[in-house]
Image (cartoon, rainbow, N blue to C red; front, side, top):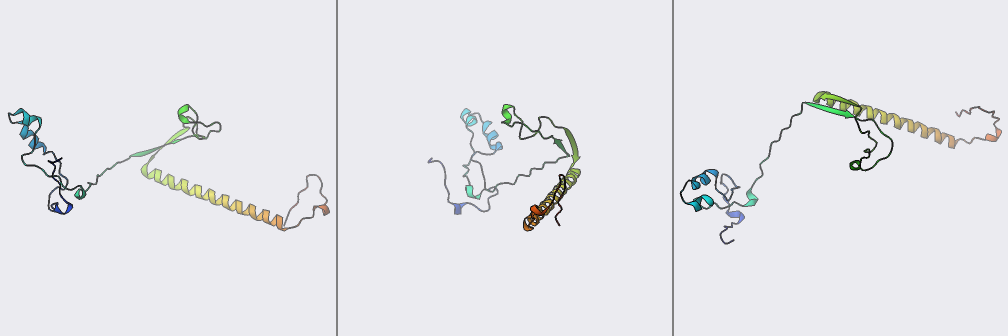
Length: 165
């Protein structure tokens, strides 16, 4: 521990070309050290001048550019399955999905985006229809409760229908 040089954050050189230096020398220095005839130098090659590590606080992470390009999207469709469910690793079906896909559709990225938009619009349209239907059902139920119907005065035969206005 006595051989490690420590510096305060203020003492770090601002103009240093690389704020994150390794303790070991560059590959050129290692190969230069191994060319000497001394076997101890080739086992433990060291730089000719001691390299003081910069402060960790000054090290900036390099942004890695990771580009992934997809050519197409493959969608596997599974039919629903009613029945038991259990842990999939124990051989059960997974939450109502059949074990094999029923069909496969392959899209380009543009086609898939259009298909997703269409599917989303259809889902919203179905949801809106369901809300309207529930609203109408609620109005009918409220109107039935609001109207007092005296069934004792009605003469109904088997199969007759009462219409409420």
